[in-house]
Image (cartoon, rainbow over all chains, first blue to last red; front, side, top):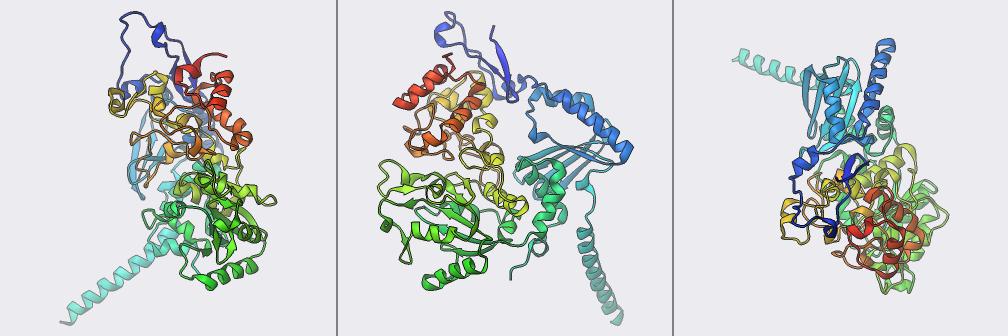
Length: 169
Length: 360
């Protein structure tokens, strides 16, 4: 039996030195994916789920959103699986193109969103759970709307000028 | 006068939403709570551009290359542009007396407020080994640091002496912290440091001042964990699967590079998560062991391809506690035998992963 301890978000199996291995005993070779799948949980998923539950109560009572940074917590494959199991999949899903994609989706618990930011190479930049009626990143920013107004006004002026030109012919 | 960040963003067609995404990631990277994100964004937008004087001493220009060679225009570029870089020998157009006049003017105009960035080590064996405009590096550092709000030692050379300090250290190279004792010094080691780490430190200084530092003067947010802690090959280490050569089955299968000399377990940096070249990869992902370039005296660590327990050299006296703590954390919660570690440090003895696991 290989004893295991949990540390820093990963399960480590204490190694058996070659001299202690039985005669003819084969080394257990696994692919990278298999190794990653075999990772157990750190035990952090349950406290985070309770935090999400409290945040949802706060949202309903006060309207105040909460953001939880998943990058700040040791999380292993088992924790991700447990969180996905409990939260499930919801109705809304959006992909934003912001110097790399940002994936936003509502979980099966309405008001609880996953927001994952990726860079242009598809590498994860940051991961959040956002408890809100609408995640902040989805909202149009006033400055962007102002820039949009300027662009739309310019385009309308161009279009009007083109139409006037046609009418004049 | 250069435009501030909002104008720069508009010029480059960067939406505020994209800026907020950057701020969310930066807040996470700086290990600040997500609730601080609006403050980070506001601080970046409203910060008065600090004057920056960048001094390059005994260095290879790799640090400047790193911070300037990014996929333009990135928001990191914009933030870098949001400081007033008043003196940088490599980048500025002026030279000779005009260049020195620019430095003196910036020092006079922004006395007590400017940020001094230094890359490269300082020769004290004979100050004449490295001079700029006839001024020795040591004198220029002392003179310029006197009016600085803080000093950022960029790269391992400025932070710990680096390669010029490597045995036998012919120029008597020392770190900035060996000369400047009365100013806050932020060490940003790496050979070179990751661009986003430099801009992250700069952003932290702009938003909230000098960041929290570790025992080696490094921002804890960027140097708080070992590369090993976050390495995607860590599960192989945990399973005891090691590449024994660069072309064996283990290397092809992507197993842990510890036995090939990887210094990941004792090296604190965000290489494994932030990565290089626009987040493309990092050395271990490319199949090469970590050299440990963010740690003091990495060059004298007994060989890049030999597994060692702790770095050697003079900085061991200063940094042993931190390095040892990193080693312990990196390889598994206190299982590193003190006896083996001390013995290996003293004798440069090669140890492998099994030796490190033996109880003391």
